[in-house]
Amino acid sequence: MAELSIAIAGDLHDQWDRSDQQLLARIAPDALLLVGDLSDGRARIPRLLAELDLPMACILGNHDTGRDPSGSRLQRQIGLLGERHCAWRLRELHPPGLAVVGARPGSAGGGFHLSQAVRSVYGPLTMEDSAGRIEAACLAADPALPLVLLAHCGPSGLGSGPDDPCGRDWKVPACDWGDQDLAVAIARARRQRPLPLVVFGHMHHRLRRGGGERRSLHRDSAGTFYLNAACVPRHGHDPHGRALRHFGWAVFRGTELERLSHRWYDPDGPLLYEQTLWMVPAPVLPC
Ligand SMILES: [Fe+2]
Image 1 (tube, helix red, strand yellow):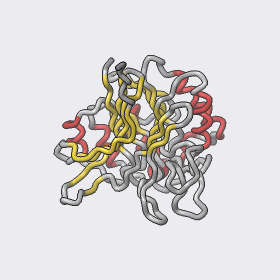
Image 2: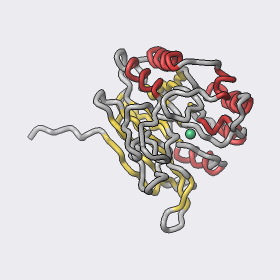
Image 3: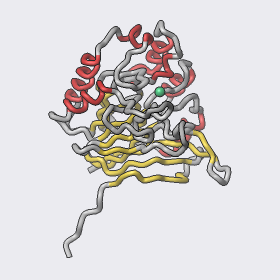
Image 4: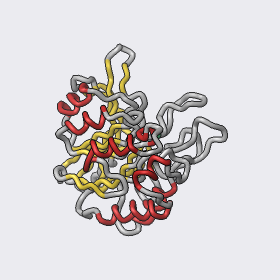
């Protein structure tokens, strides 16, 4: 079975430029997923992304509304991204053979709330509307393809501590700040088809109160993996002063997930660091 490598760009917050485009050309993942918060509503990054010749899917985040309640800044970016933006719908990428379902755009987490900008663009959807759309898109995906659910904020139910994948870390008491519509959609869709991987961002890895790092991977009792890719800032330097570019990384073999990690690349291409979060256990050989 063919191996499929997916690069996942966490919240960019303006940290995306031609060096990232050139890096992607060098490392050549089979697909690129972006979890949103590209900037604060500017068009620069959507324009750059539209130049990339790479199978891609994106969901925009709360920052991408640019605090513009009319929705025009959000709409402008959606227009520039075109088919790449997959809010509340299925996007099948051929090649490489990957089904991506986008969840609710513009989410700021915390259960269910539609910002005025999102209402202006998409209408006054209820939580049930949102969950139903996500579920329907999952069920429309070709079962022969690996399926990834792409969200800005992850679902509720992954823990209520400040360091949990969607835990509120900026205010006491900490609580579960995940999206309820996404959790409902996942539970319903999974009754009818496997869902190996959910990727998202929004809740930055570096914790705001008390320091430390967020837990960026969760696996639930049904076997679905949840990867928080929000390493912010994603442009950094190592202790030797070498420039780093972060990507979350997922490897499928066929429809089965094989490996999840965080990767930090030299902008010129070499992989400098990899934190393996999970990999498929080695088979037990008979004695
Ligand atoms: Fe966000």
